Image (cartoon, rainbow, N blue to C red; front, side, top):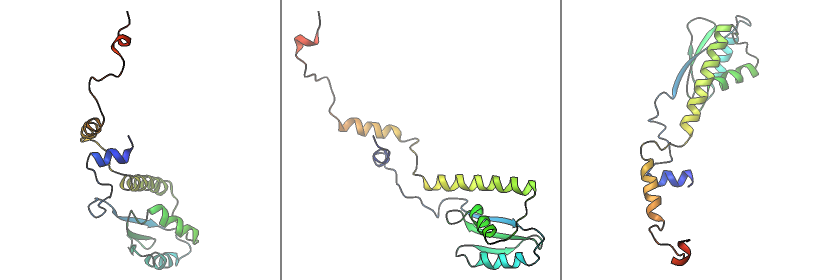
Length: 150
């Protein structure tokens, strides 16, 4: 049985209520190297030009806070775009570990949000409906003398 058939038999919906999905709005900090001096201002302008991305000043003069929907953007996508444009991001060990963890978490969350719902508690209903749609019973087309081998 195909997965789509099983979902339909169990009464599951294929669409995802994106508004109801918790935790899709992210607020992340992007840290920059101290040189060149004006790159934070330029990066803020560049990120603010993207629809769906809000940019705020960070904790200090070398950081920015970006707010976005994880279904539209990820931190990895934003930082890759900044690095491709020539901006110098902070690369200390702690920052790189923190980024790697965020990249993994966001990638996993996006994958889970975009995949169809899984059957967990209603799986028995699928098999009941599939069984009732097929002919079953004690009927055997084999002649009686061939059924019993003596």
